[in-house]
Amino acid sequence: MQLDQATVEQLREWEAELAGQYQTIVAKQLNLDVTRGKPSAEQLSLSDTLDGFLEGNYQTDNGTDTRNYGGIDGIAEAKRLGSDLMGVPASHILVGGNASLTLMYQTVLTAYQFGLTGPESAWKNIDKPKVICPVPGYDRHFTVCEQLGIEMITAPMTATGPDMDAVEALIKADSSIRGMWCVPKYSNPTGVVYSDETVDRIAQLGNIAHADFRVFWDNAYAVHDLNSDAPQLASVFDACAKHGTDNTVIQFASTSKITHAGAGVAFMAASDANLAGIKKFLGAATIGPDKVNQLRHAHFLPNRDVLMSHMQKHAELLQPRFDAVLTALDSAFTGTGLGSWETPQGGYFVSFDTRPGCAKETVRLAAEAGVKLTPAGATFPYGQDPNDCNIRIAPSVPSVDEVVGAMEVFVTCVKLASVRQALSKQ
Ligand code: PMP
Image (cartoon, rainbow, N blue to C red):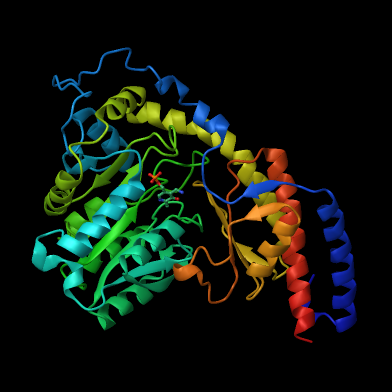
C-alpha cells in the first residue's frame, strides 16, 4: 500500500476493504492488553524459590541481623549484587527498597528541594529549573518532573541514543537546565542501546553544564538481553572518571524484571558526594530498607553467572513474543511508508511510529476492537506527542497466541487510520 501515490478511488477501495476486515475483528470481541511493561506470571514464577530461601538464617557475613532496623545504604551482599548488575564498584552502590522509581523520585526531589551537595545546590533556588527528556521516553520519568513542577524540554531519540548535538545545544543555550533522563539500554520505549560515542558525550556533559546538572541514568534493562549477541553498553561510570565528571551521572537499576516485579530490590550507583546527599535525605525518611529481602536476593543471585543464566530463562519466554510483534510489523509495513520501528534485542518494548497524526486514531480503533494499547502521547512529557505518531507495544504479559492476535488488530488499525487520514486530505 503506497498511500502517497494512490488515487482517490484506490484509497476508497482500500478503506472499504480494511473497514470490512476491521468489522470482522470487532465481531470477535477480543480482550487483549499490550499496555504495560511488566513480567508475565510465567516469568515471575522463575523466582518463586525466593520465598523461604533464607531458611531462617537472617545474618549477613559481617553478623548483621537483617531483621532489625538500620543500614541506610544496604547490606554488603546486596551491594555485590548491584555491582554485578550495574558494573560499578560495590563501594559506589546504595541499595534501597523494592522500586528504583522510588530512588529516582527521591533523588530528583533531593536535588530540587534540598540540594545533592548542600542547600546552595538546590534546584529550587533558581526560577525555572529544567530537565531534558529524550523522546519518546518513559512516562513515569515525566510524572516525577510534573509532580515536582520541574519543566521538561525534549530532545529527539535516534538509533544511537539521544540526539547529542541537540542535547549539547540545549545545555549551552540555557543555563537553567539541571538534569536529563536516560534509559541507556533497551530504552523505554524505542529499545535502542546508546552507542559508545553517545555514552562518552553524556559523560562529558558535566564539563559544559551547570555544576548542579545531573543525568538520571535509569538502567532498568541492564541485563535484559533477548539473545547472546546483544549489544554492549559502554560504562558511563568509567567515562565519567575519564572526563573528571564523577558527580554528573547517577545510575539506577533494580531486580523488578529479574525476580518479582513488586517485591524486588532497587539500586543506585553514584559518586561519594551524590551518595552523601541522598543518604542525608533517606536518613530522614526511613530507618533503613528491607534488608531481609536484600539478603534473600543476594543469595538467590550469588554471582554474575547465575544472574545471566537466570536472565536467559526470561529471554526464552520473551523472545517468541517479540518475534510475533516484529514479524507482524515486518510483513505488514516493510517498504510501505506506513510506519517505522526499531528491532530491539532486549528490554520490554517495541516502539512504532505511524504516519504523523495517526497514533491516537490507531489506539482508539484498537480499543474498540478489544486491544488495549498504551495511550498515544504517553511517551511524551505532558502526554503530548507533537506529531501524534508514537505508540508503545509491550508484549511480555499476553501469551504468544494473544500477541499474534493483538498484532493482527494493530496492523489493521494502523492501515485503516492511515487510509482514512489520506482520504480526509483529498
Ligand atoms: N525504569 C524504566 C525505564 C522502566 O521501564 C520501569 C518499569 N516499567 C521502571 C523504571 C520501574 O522500575 P522499578 O520497578 O524498579 O521501580
